[in-house]
Image (cartoon, rainbow, N blue to C red; front, side):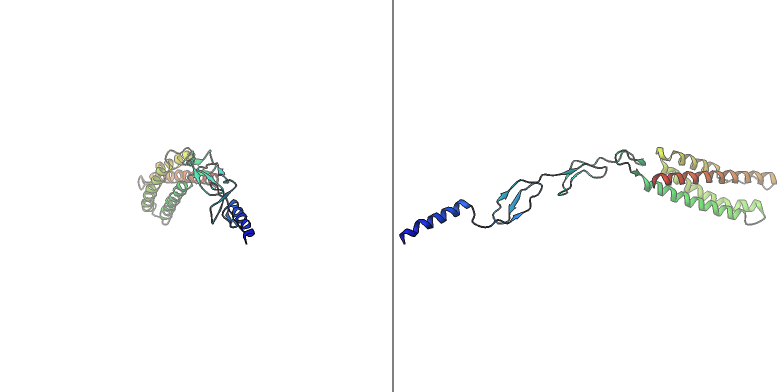
Length: 208
């Protein structure tokens, strides 16, 4: 019995040297912590370290492993136009709102033309269309306000101003000369409207 005692001490000594005496179960290393035993918190190796992707216009620098962020997003370089950072066109919502208003205003001028060509009493028929042009004027002005001073919308802003100024809101009289003058105003307006629609098509191609 006495001879077995040293073996027990040797075993205990070896256990103490080997650490906690159990098989480690390690969690995976993360960006900030190395592999860690779930029972005794013994660590092994090193933390992975963050791997940050470059900041974008809308997102700060972001670690592709854990999602942690650093710093701030760059921000777009322009409100309406192509951003020089991300090369994406900005301000599409503003342009879509302008287009919606122009489309509605144009529908009012279409109704005006229908009212003005529906009979043979030209003077009164022309008068019947005025209220539609007045409705269109209000919406054209709202679209113009949305254009602001954005350089990409300068041509559209010019076209809308021309439309507002050319709206055929005045019938000069009942005689043939006056009615012909009003017809000239109609022709001028609808020519400018067609030009504005071409500008809209060009802008639509630019943003899509």
